[in-house]
Image (cartoon, rainbow, N blue to C red):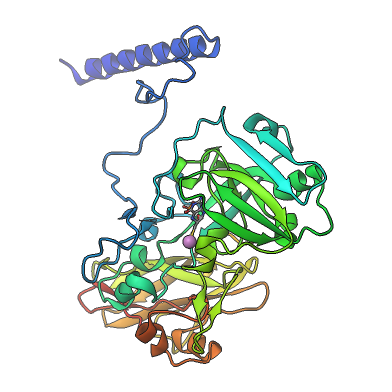
Amino acid sequence: MKPKDSGRRSFLKNSAALAGLAVGAVRTASGQSAPSENSSERPKDLHAYGERSRYETSARLGSMGLYDPAPEGYHRDFGYRTPIQDSVGYITPASVHFMIAHGYEPPDIDPAEHHLLIHGLVEKPLIFSMSDLKRFPSVTRAHFVECNANGAPAGPTGKYRIAPEATAQDTHGYTSCSLWTGVPLSTILKHVGVKAEAKWIIGEGSENGKHTKSIPIEKAMDDALIAYGQNGEALRPQQGYPIRLLVPGWEGINNVKWLRKIKLVEEPYMGMWESTKYPSLRPDGLSRWFQFQMGPRTVITRPSGGQKLDGPGFYEISGLAWSGGGAVRSIEVSTDNGKTWREAEIQSPVYPKAHVRFGFGWEWNGEETILQSRCTDELGERQPSVVELAKFWKVEPDFFIKTGTIPGHFNAIQPWKINSDGSVQNAISF
Ligand SMILES: Nc1nc2c(c(=O)[nH]1)N[C@H]1C(S)=C(S)[C@@H](COP(=O)(O)O)O[C@H]1N2
Ligand SMILES: [Mo]
């Protein structure tokens, strides 16, 4: 058979398939062969809802375990980390957005049955269905979510924080960035009428553990969202389907998923998580409760721990920067272990409280060195080194590792060591 013929044949075959698809689509649109509405089956047509190439294998790592059982030296416990080392651009695919759910599988919620109750210190308590919520004007905004455990040298995962083999997924996998669509929480709160005595809102999730979080009313009225969309489609079950709170720039714990109730109150509740695992222990033995805003932070995603350079020559150093304090203003990279710093190039839109992609051209001479990055946000706050952070908290740097705790958030600079064979290792020390 002549190559020309086979080409023509496959063209004909493809156009037949396309024609079939078009007919199918028309029939679905007119409702004649639409799948049953409460069917939980996946679409049979491979192209009806896309999957990535089978050559792409990047995935979350982790487990739903709650510290137990915990093998010696383990590090991938309790929650799923995003494969940040494989990221491109500034948006995290919803399929690999990191996931924290305190020991519970995401509940299987039928949006037609789901409701949001707003009550407490309001003029008129109301129950909203999903379609009620979608009648309000929506907004779409890029925002990161970051767990305050992200790369912290604390808890059982902290032991792994200094391991040379730790990857960026291990050290920074508890942050992701999406385009969130939803209704500003302020719109809904104005609709129900906030009483003057209301100072806090208490958000509650639908899973068996009923994750509960206290949030000051000022933030609720500022830029918080009731989000139902993520990157152009419905939230994923892992991210809180069908609705979640999105509290930009603040600790991940505030972003209550599978949201079912908001109560307006005078005083914060001492919810289980906000009063036990999430406060930070100070050197004087007291705990710091209710920390909110995440500090400026960066991570070089390429080259990063566990990757390998193919010999000397040109590389682009690529990474992500973000700050809970607003927009990232500048990003610097050092290729000589912090002796000198130079401005990196910003390679994506700069939205407040969102990831920003940066790049930095680098000629590697084949010698051992250490790469670092840091950023400064619109408040003028600059990401600290471990030593600077320790000074800020008035402790010795080894306090973090010795006590397995930090007096506040951990947003220190991440150094990656390039060995002369091109291998890359975690080089943080305390
Ligand atoms: N209902 C509910 N919401 C929750 C949690 C939870 O366990 N249950 N975990 C919180 C914590 S601690 C974090 S860091 C973020 C993580 O959001 P993500 O899983 O979408 O990345 O969700 C928050 N919202
Ligand atoms: Mo978290």
